[in-house]
Length: 219
Image (tube, rainbow, N blue to C red):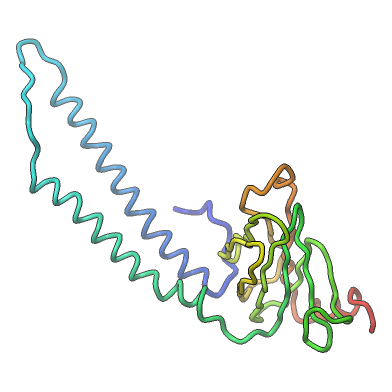
C-alpha cells in the first residue's frame, strides 16, 4: 500500500510516511464502514408495498458516539505529529551546506555563498533551477519569493514549504541517497506554473567537490 509515494531519501521522511500510513488506513477503514452501512441501509429500507415511512427524531447516544470518536482520533493524530513537526519545522540541526533559493515567475534562483560563507557578497555563485547538495549532509535552504506565493516541493525528501514575498523561511533536509530528484513548484502561481520545474542533485562527496571545482567561478 502507498507504493505510489515517491521513494523516501530523507532522514525524517520515514516519520512523515508513518503518519501518512496511519491516516490512510484510518480513512480507508472509515470509507469501507460508511459504504457497507450505506449499502445495508439501501437494502433494509428499500421501498416495499404496504410499508409506511416512520419519522425518527434521531439517536443522541449514536450521534455523540460518531462525533466523539473522530474527535479523539484527530486529537491523537495531532499529538503524534507534534514531535515530527517540531523536528522538521522548528529544530533544524546545524548546517553543513547553506543555499538561498528565491522563487519567481517562473523558475528557482539558487545562490550559494562563496568562500566567505555570506550571502550578498561578490563571491556568491548563482544558478537557476539546478540545486546541488552533498549526500548525508544537513542542508539549510533560505527560501524567498520575488513575486507571488510559490511552493518549494521536494517529494522524495518529504519537504514542502510555501515561499512568500517579503519573508525568509528556513527549510532543511538531509538526503540519504545520491540521485536526481524533482524540484517543482506545488502552488499554482501563474500561466507558467507547469514549466516551473527544477532539479535537486544529491551528489556523493567526491562528485559534489568535482561539481564545485568545475562549475563555480574562480575568485
